[in-house]
Image 1 (cartoon, helix red, strand yellow):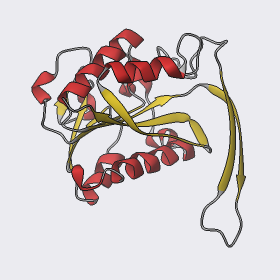
Image 2 (spheres, one colour):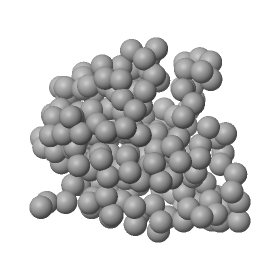
Image 3 (tube, rainbow, N blue to C red):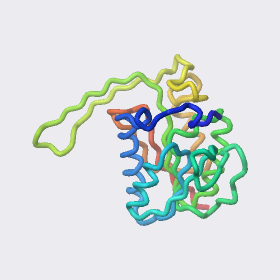
Length: 211
């Protein structure tokens, strides 16, 4: 697993318009969980933007990453046993993280995450597809309207990012396979979401199955 700090990214490069759209939805989807969520574990960090936004809105946030140079609260390798974190967090969030592991390892990580969260898991994964998005916005309307047409790149095996082992939509990784992995991990889908402006990030709000 390549460390994000090894890519020598600058914040000005990383914080693109599309990524800021993704940050908006990360925050918005966490808000939809309401008062059930107070303590959050954020896994996979590059900067403190989401953490700061969550803290400003009254959440207790603990950060975790495999890379000590990012100064997370917890050094965490998703390929190891991290069951000591069980039942400490109402929600665990990780965005664009699982695809940095080989698929079998990401499945095992998903199972562990389902085990240790008290209630929710909020994730995003890359969705590799050809798409056409049309936006319609009127001056008197508060919200834009969209038409999104997309076709998963099932004929291709090449991720958009070289650091990714897999991406949903590519050959061998249809959406059904990913959702089957979610179900096998003991999680139920509460919400699925993709923004027509930036459909590469596919969001899932998952709830731990009651025993």
